[in-house]
Image 1 (cartoon, rainbow, N blue to C red):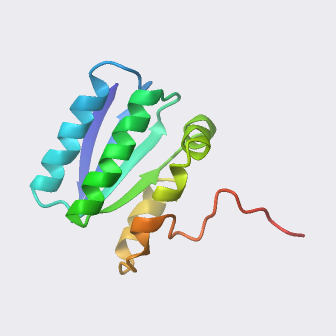
Image 2: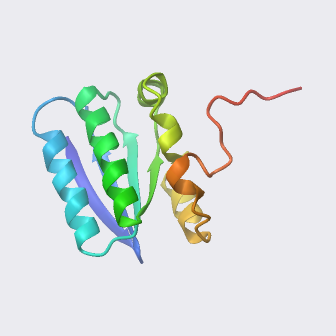
Length: 135
C-alpha cells in the first residue's frame, strides 16, 4: 500500500493507494496518524478512493483511528469509499461512527463548516448510507 499525506491549510489528507491487507500497513498507518495528531492536526481526511479492497487490518486501523481522533478532539472524515469498503464497514456496524463524504473535495468543504460536535457520533454530512429515496 502507498501512503501520501497532503496538507490543505489546517487539514491533513491521508491518501491510501492499493489493497489494505494484513501485514505492515495497519501499524504503519496508525503510527502515521498518531504522528499527525501529535503534531497538532485537528482536521483529518482519510481518502480511500484508490483502495479497491480492505480486510480486517483496515477495519482495525479505522476503529483505532476513530478512537484516537475522538480522544484528541480531531474532526475525522473518510472520503472515496468504494462499494466494497463501505459494505465492510456497514456490515460491522462501523459506518455509523464516521462522517463519510464522496471525495476529498466534499470532505474539505465539510471541514470548512463549523464543528457541530455531532461528528463524533456518526455521519454529520446528512448522507445516510442506509436512507432510501422516496418518490
